[in-house]
Amino acid sequence: MSTTASTPRLKTSAMIASIAAEGQRVRAAPFGKALVALAQQRPEIVGLTADLAKYTDLHLFAQAYPERYFQMGMAEQLLLAAAGGMAKEGLLPFATTYAVFATRRAYDFIHQVIAEENLNVKICCALPGLTTGYGPSHQATEDLAMMRAVPGLTLVDPCDALDIEQAVPQIAAHPGPVYMRLLRGNVPMVLDEIEGYRFELGRAKLLRDGDDVLIISSGLLTMRALEVADDLARDRIGVAVLHSPTIKPLDEATILAQVRYKHRLVVVAENHSVVGGLGEAVASALLRHRVQPARFELAGLPDAFLDAGALPTLHERYGISRQALAARIKRWLA
Amino acid sequence: MTTDDARLRELSAVAWRIRRYAVRMGEVQGQGYVGQALGWADVLAVAYGHALRLRPEDPQWEGRDRFLLSHGHYAIAHYAALIEAGIVPESELETYGSDDSRLPMSGMATYTPGMEISGGSLGQGLAIGVGMALALRHKANPAFVYVSMSDGELDEGAVWEAALSASHWKLANLIVMVDINNQQADGPSSQVLGFEPLADKWRAFGWHVQRIDGNDLAQVLQAFDSARAWPQAQPRVILCDTLMGKGVPFLEQREKNHFIRVDPPEWQQALDILDRNRPEGALA
Image 1: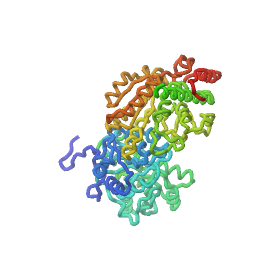
Image 2: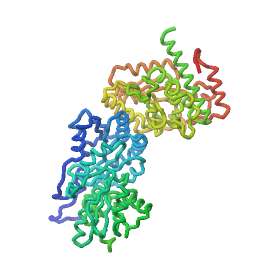
Image 3: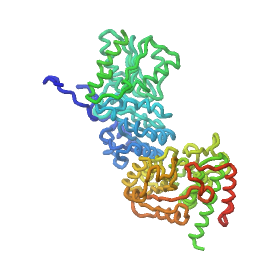
Image 4: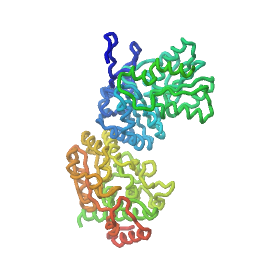
């Protein structure tokens, strides 16, 4: 296929690709910086990785606390079991790798070693959902579905740098295992524009109100939802955005109250397969509590092995780009 | 009589009691991995009767040596050792495998005092042990981590991730005992997935290796002492060839199975045989 000189060929988005749009405000390595700051007050914090310190921003912790840093090699089963062993000895391990490897490769080790004993391990994983163009080997499009099924595991899907900075001390303070999806590198800064916003573990937060649509979202899809809300406002479509960064335990009370509040189209938008993620968690809550929105739709990734390529192309193709998400919502409203 | 002879006589009484407790628990359920328990009793006797630093009244004592049962189905053997060590009361063996018992068929940390990990999913214990050994060193705690595992477990890739890691981190506070009874679920381990030459493999991974007859108490005692005393900064493994059903000849000779068949009247027959061969001076 030929390309004209004026339209540059989009290249496969590598692991280090930023999800920030051009010109967007960003903060560098929010996870690594927050962990370094917290570790100063909490000497029991240790950091472990499976050959992905640089790609999870844990390298900052390694530089700051070399004696508390454990490079476990490219061995995710070992990584998570050893983190469990350290937690049994009273340390507070933060273990990092890519989401695909922690969940798909080391599932039994998270389930049996960490969760079954309710060990205090924080599993922080980069490349959640569709944030790399490397194809299904690296795209963790079903990590939340897998992790939701593990009893007692707390799941966090932060939206931006602010969420991550504020989540780190809170997941550390939470007694028990946590799985957190990481955005790393230059991470967009969005939620500081929402007056009074603060990440609270276990709580969903209404970021803006609107009469026609309620988007319930997590992770980077909350950023998209806010953009789409701006865009649709120009068409006089009122879009409310309810950000639910804690996937489990789900803040059902806030979600139910918001759905009951106005008879609207409810769209659950997530950087995850439509199978087993936030969407199905919300659907289950609504059905169990007999709360019936005007219409209910899932704006997640398809139940499929996704393509390789450039992230802008892929986000457009699978309906989670700004334009594609807006178009889907308009279609559902029509 | 030398000190060693006296020690060995004591340990043979310990091993004898562990075998008896295990058979009695098997009788409660009419089933259980009693073949493995009989085969592993001598190693457990040396571990709990000689090597481990423990405070039976305080199973979570920070200074204790950690004993990780990676092969969770050996719980019946481990409970017997915990009874022998005074951590679990003997009266509790009557509850083995019953609803709401602290002694479930597969060992779990959340159920039983002295059970450090939940080991049923095979191949996880050594990796947990690596984390604990690193943490103990980090805390400047001189305790040892002992990991008990089986030859069939060596099929699991995570064992070798952990073996590489222990050597990389020079974990001199980590001692592994592998039960080589050559039996796993689908048949002889060597036929299911061959692992020999085993000593060479561990040596190549950077470990201090001993291979012994795991039913010869003198060898087991010597191996534990050598493993602890080994001066170099490397993890230690004791490869123990054992005989399933050891001490009860009709079980030793039974067609070998992972889950050994024991008919109802045979539990008492097994106890009778053990009692006839009671070591001199041993009390039940």
